[in-house]
Image 1 (cartoon, rainbow, N blue to C red):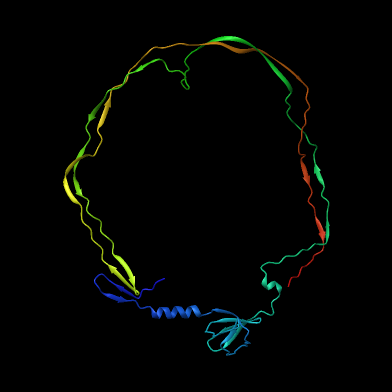
Image 2: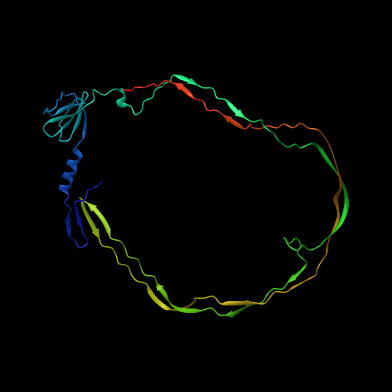
Length: 281
C-alpha cells in the first residue's frame, strides 16, 4: 500500500501530512504485552538478563514482552523479569475442557404391577361380495337450470357498439429542449513521490431551451351505445339414458379382527439403595 505525505490542491498549494507522533504511539502499543515464545535462557524472578535465547537466536526483550521458561511465565518491565505464573502444579485436567466417567449405584428396583378393567372391544366389518344392477333405458328432456355454470350458448349475433368521444381531454404547453447540455466532470487525483495532486474538473453546460409544445395532461371521456343480440332459442333433448331399475347382492361371510388398548394404571418402580459419592481431582 502506497503512503501519502503531502496533498497538492488545484490552486497549486501543497500541504504536508504529519503523523509521526501517531506512528510512534502505535508502535509502542504493538510491542506491549507481546508473547516472544519459549526461552532456553535461565530466568528467575527479578532477573535482568537481556537479550535471551529463543529458537537458538538472541532476542532483545522490550517492556511488556512475555516468555516461558520451563513451567514458569515471566513478563519484562523494561529492566527486570517478573514471574507471574507457574504451571508445574497443574494436573492433567488443567488442559481439558471436559471430563467424563461411569458410576453404578448400589441397590434394587421394585417390580411394577398393573391394575385395570376388562377391555371392551368394538369394530366395523365390510362383507365380501358383489352388487349386481339391472339397468333400463329412460328418455329425459333437458331444461334450463335456475343457477350454476352455463353449459350452452344459443346461436345468434351481438352487434358492435358505437364508440364516440363524450368530452375532450385536457392539454398544457411546455418548453422543448434543443440541446441537453453536458455533464460536469469530477476532479482527478494522482499520487507521485508520496504527493497527492488534485486536478479540478469541468462544471459542464446547461440545456438549451426551444419552442413551446402542447402536450396532453388528461384522458378524454368516451361513450358507447348498448350492443344488441339477435338469435333464436333452441330446446335440448337427450337420447336414451341407462339407469338402474333393481339391485341384488351376493357374498360370503368374513372374519372380524379387533385390536385395542386396555385401560388401567401401572405402578411406578421404586429404587432402594445406599448413598454413594464420586471424587474427581
